[in-house]
Image 1 (cartoon, rainbow, N blue to C red):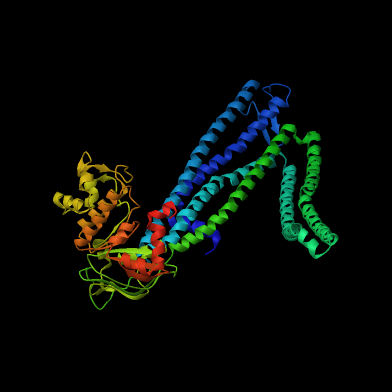
Image 2 (spheres, rainbow, N blue to C red):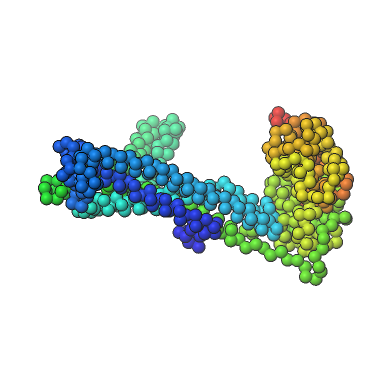
Length: 612
């Protein structure tokens, strides 16, 4: 894939290419107004500042041989009316131009926003597809690049580019046409001069940069040598004589002064040489312009010269802006290539054993993980040779030196990711024998925030479950120690809550998430614990809720953030460098594992905050 067409291919992939058509139409319409305003300004200058008074009905205003206007052409016989028409026309076009730009910029911004939105949507879809085969955390690196760099870069680049293209290109062509109509040869000479000046500046910059890079390295070396001699001159006087030390100092000063002078001269000749070059071009231009102004047969006066100068400036300004936006677009094209590469990542096939029919997921006896290795969609190793034997009614805490490793292992138990080697067994059924659609029904994820959606607490607990009655809901809320907190609200379980409702502390959100998971009678619950609570009583209530849920049957796997969870867990699994290095009770691991002691102190010990 070439970088040049990557952005266009991405826009086509996002399905927003058609929305550029009205945007282009409005941009082209807006591009016509500044050149017309310039013509009106030229006629105004011709009339007021350079004329002999108000034009008469027989007056003909000219800007060169082809741009002319008379009272008869605009249907009026009053010179004053010509002035009024020029001013009101300019004012009207200015207002229309402002409104068109407002509409145009909003359309461009909405186009860029829609591109970003579609990037997010397609990233989420691709992440969902890849998660089944390669895990959720395995895609986090890709998505982090997307969300932090790629999508914002594409959005800002699309906004900047479409704000300029094709509007400025059409505007430059119209300014060029007006300048040519006023005087073709002056316009040609001016454009050739601008092109030569641009090439000369580019040549100067390249040469100066090359010379500066070479000489700067020498200057730095000589400066370091001089600094070393200055620091050690007293010691050098003991090795040699004092005169020899100062002779060495003077020698280093000479080398540094010579190299620095060469660098200074390489950096100072650019501006004077550029001024001389510009002076030559301007002199040639002034001679040609003067000849045209002195020639009475050309219909080219000072008003036309001013108008032509503004037109040429408009051409140069539009082209410079386009070039600047084009340079910024090149980086966006490179980003678009990476985005397309991610979107085109093939989804790994989920191999289901053909020797037996698909089975429902059950976890009555064990969850066995034997020598499992997992990779992400780029082939990067996430887990290596992991073995673990878990049983229902256990609370298992996963601790790792890198959070992505413990999260990947937990997500693997939820059915996200297919090992490239090893096997997973739920009771007596291999992972490949289990219906993939059964995992979301039997394996439940609980985040640190629940998560809770906008609606009543009852709606959040039901989460689509139609068979739950109020007795079941109340019992689940009691099991997670949330009944009293819920009843404290004015409407109890019917209280309307939002995603960021400040009335719900983090632990209450988390426990309501546990209650919702319990209502689905899951085989496995994976829970991301919230941060340290505001009081020991709240922490104790959450820890007891986790233990009580496990006693009801499911295997509960916790990504802990609290020391109390580690102390009460039935099993703590220590993951390091993509594999399980130890497992056991918290007290046993504290005794035998230096790595575990370090991690528990850094992440969980309250003493770290007071420097003990």
